[in-house]
Length: 354
Length: 268
Image (cartoon, rainbow over all chains, first blue to last red; front, side, top):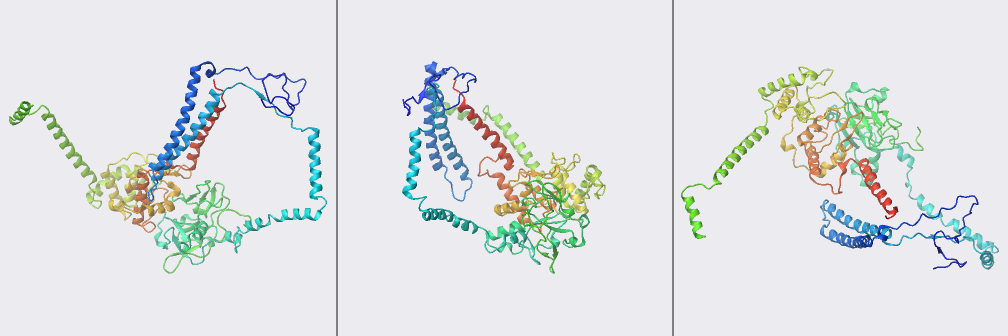
């Protein structure tokens, strides 16, 4: 049995009078009831049950081996064929089941071994006293003093201050590196306030990029729209631009649309209106359009906008109406934007005016 | 052996029938009659109804007056209870009546699908009558429904349809009790007609928005995802993160709790 410094046994039997710890013993406390009496298990009393528990444990270990072998076999027997997405299904399913069962069987066997087969006699293991002896403590202080003297940390102030300065300067390159992750040569604030739309740019179908004539919209139609020229951008830039410029184009009966001003009305064309698809709440694409109620629903947090009333918020957490894209038709009858959105699209940000 | 064989040959030559012969004869007779009947009846069901024939239009008008005019008006001009059907075309009628949405059972957030009330011929007759009132979108031909480009259809579906109908066509909720129905098991012709006419709150996707070719692609995509199992395994109805999260909460956490209880329980 292991002994500690004071020569006492590390592990002492339960209910031992010798048991001492670091805890403060209150004089008027309840008497420590100690551990409940030891209750033998079935496997302690019945040799047959013990044998059975042993068998369960080693059978589980063997099953784990079998499952591991099965996983290797499944990986080879259900290969992933290129061009066939569905081959992935069986491959991952059986490989995963094999690996999962082999690990689970080891775990269950180990726990069962510990619970049913190993001895379960209760024992108390007391903590060592944390405080060192006076001698040790004095020596520790001495070591500190000696080190300081030998290194001259307190005496050679130039070296000490140099070290402190070097440690402070060391993280500076990291700050510069992280600063470099910010957009280069562009003002992020400006980026949030403008989109790809420009005056005279045609409205085109998503994803084909073909222009749309006003005559092609029948009452109740809904077109998913991207700006002209967007599809010609490199993919990454295209996606960045699309995330802000996506527009829903719908046609209602002209008399169904209510306007707060002549100017706002001039942003529509014969009942055709174009609204940003980016929710003003947290920027989900709002495109669940109900043509009879003229309601637009955002699927993320159930904000509802009324297209008949300048996309006013009628329900949900969105704070502002969806921005409207001012449109008209060009000489050939194609729908064009008369400007960019007149306010930033999407959710609020720090520098947004309102 | 030889004797036996010669005996059986002799029986056949004598013209006497074996015991099973009459049973076989009856079976052949039944199969032939049944088969012919089945062939004839399917032939008559799929026989195209001539939507421009005056007799069919007349039949449709009678059906309309008896079943639809209460809400849509005697001349299909519309009333306070139902919209005008002038100019909606045969495609709209075939969709609404052919999927059982019309005649409507009761008013509510939307007309729901229910068992179809009319035979195919009666539906076509109603469509013929409504189409005769004013020109409108027509029922598509079978050739417009098959053999599209699945990957292009998938992209168009995700852009134009998936926000309401779910990326796997499992349907989804709209506002105030309305919903976009599930698209699994919906006939190709009905999907096509729905895009063309924009039934109820669904927007219209006319042929200038999604060309007939593109509509065919979308239908091919829907057919493809129904016929091919998901590569990702168990779909959980494709209802998205809510159903998947609930599944994990119930079964995943349940299993963890059960294991924890088992690990910490004393062996008996």
